[in-house]
Image (cartoon, rainbow, N blue to C red; front, top):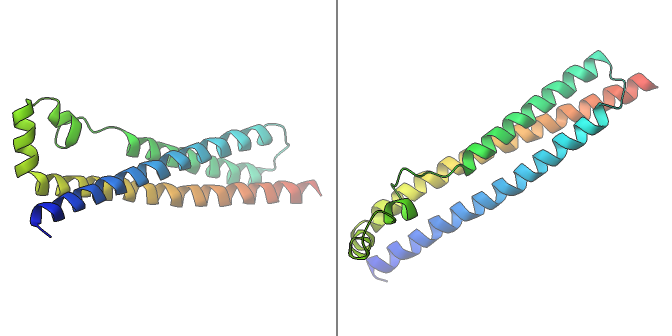
Amino acid sequence: MSTTRSLTGAHAEVKAEIARTDTKTGLLLAFVGAVLAGAWTVARDLHLTLPACIAGGLGMVLLVAAAGLLLRSTRPDLRGRHGFPLWATLTAAEVTAAVATDLAADIAGLSRLAVAKFTILRRAVDLTLTGGALLILAALLTMGGAL
């Protein structure tokens, strides 16, 4: 396999990983939004004890923080270092030359972007899990207080 083929394959793999990460981010953002809306709807109709309010409030704060991280991860990078923003400023001949000579640099840049997105997604998942556990604790405290 030639070096160009190897670079093209690596480039496609990195772009696919970014797409998978963006898909996971979108799904998690929808889930977090649904949990926030559902928890708010349920909580406003209940008489919550102080411990339940504290646990639930902390859970909601963590879920909002997770949503913020997810939104940050999906924010477009328009500084022109990779892909479309850079290519939009070039002529057709310049695009051909840039792709031919800078594929390895593009792979390195896109790989750093993929790792950054994946790291943010991991943090958001951790916050979502912790926030969900706190909401469950708040629900248990509320049920225990109602008995």
